[in-house]
Image 1 (cartoon, rainbow, N blue to C red):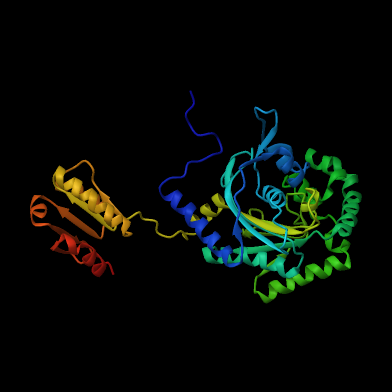
Image 2: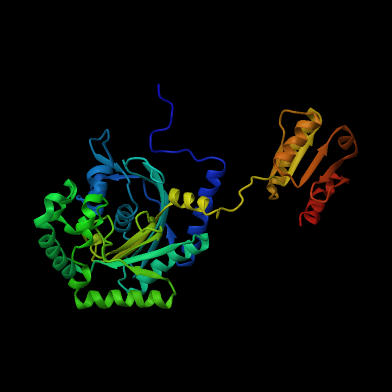
Length: 422
């Protein structure tokens, strides 16, 4: 029998859980200030949601999805990303009625069958936002700004925003034609996946990471030469607003992102390496003008992004940016016999309900191991209850910060803690 965790997954406990929840709190509290509200979707959907939403020619759909047939003979898939499921929910629940803009955020596990490696797992968590219903350079810039503010709040350094436009429909048609003409004479030297992409979606060749393709990709035609005037103006306005917001960026003509639904503005926040070959993407996203319509919904645009949580945790550890998550106790109560133990538990309950973190030793009645617990938990106060305290209706309290010890009436316990907790 195999009782170990599945390859590509991990357990979070102790400090890891606290780091995970810290990131969730920082990110969610910040985007709430931008007007976003939480959405929770199922972790599995009908497979067609992702085939339609992510794109049937993407690596995710072709190679990486966890898809299975359930007992009702339906194909369902564990979600590999967040956007398609949020779009499905947005449409199914008619969130577009009586509003011009819907702003949502999500946080939760995703699943992809990838080769496990540093910072990449088969179950991983993402935080993302989606804004539906408006097409505006201001909105694009504000979405990017929210991601930038998260990164600033976390204190991550050496970050660069890579940004590009893949244009409107006419721009992409012109560009795709130029890429086909450029790549076709040399397509046999490309990897097998890129050979199959040539006629279906040649822009995806630009996103390929296979080394043998890179020399030809670097020399490929650039999207700027094929943009319509409208697409150029739109992108120029986005960049102008980023300048006003003082968000530094690098226009990256080969950036197309790995999902088929993107249009116009696409972007990534990366940690820059010295040689540009090992840049680490923290956040990626972009605009999608046609995705909602492709689901049978109204002709509404959307824009969003996602952060990988495990990767963020690694970066914050490497840059020593995580707060101190010492799980200290405010109070440790020491009971010196079984009757005192019961009284200790009653007192602990009252203190916990008042907001104090309280620990007790459930087993030992001798002093030494209980003081050891107080030391381990770095307790500020140690309350001692023994036979004498029970007879006199008092508590003996040690203040470990001031190095003092006093005896007080039981009725004065809250007053004492309040006066001495500063």
